[in-house]
Image: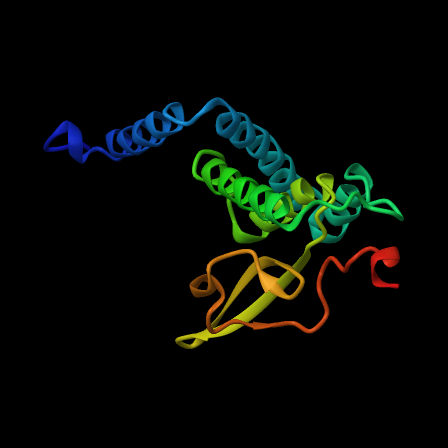
Amino acid sequence: MRWQSEDACPGAVMKTLLAGRLSRARALPWPAKKRAVHAGVWLLCVGIGLRLVGFARTQRLLERLVSAPRDDPIRLDRERADRDVERDRAAVARAAHLVPFGTCLTRALTLWALLRRRGIETVLKVGVRKHGDALAAHAWLESDGVPIVTPAEVAGYAAFREPLIPRSRKARS
């Protein structure tokens, strides 16, 4: 099949999109690049885990890999914790555009692991909503009952009552 122009070729379109994303990534300051690369590695690992061994086994593996908050967790001031949450959320969002497996579940599990490593407890939530004749599902994180995404991302989704990754046993008691 011959294309009318070079720009109409799907490969050229992909190349243009990727070039734009990479040029924006190059413009980031070094700490943001480092976080995005770190998030990208985690995204790949979580995505591969979900496809090879499924959700439950990937979840258990992540819980073992990422140390749980200690009995007496380091108390981050709220401003610093909020800043870390936003920086890691942005890093995962950036990396999800560049690596495969960027589904909402993969992004949420990756962000959960990154934040837990910092001692920030979150809960993975999954919700559904009716989308035409079908059901649409979405995964996101909550911290103290507040979604770590924009309200528009979870608007209309009814979350399951029980979280998929509950708070650690010690944090609940």
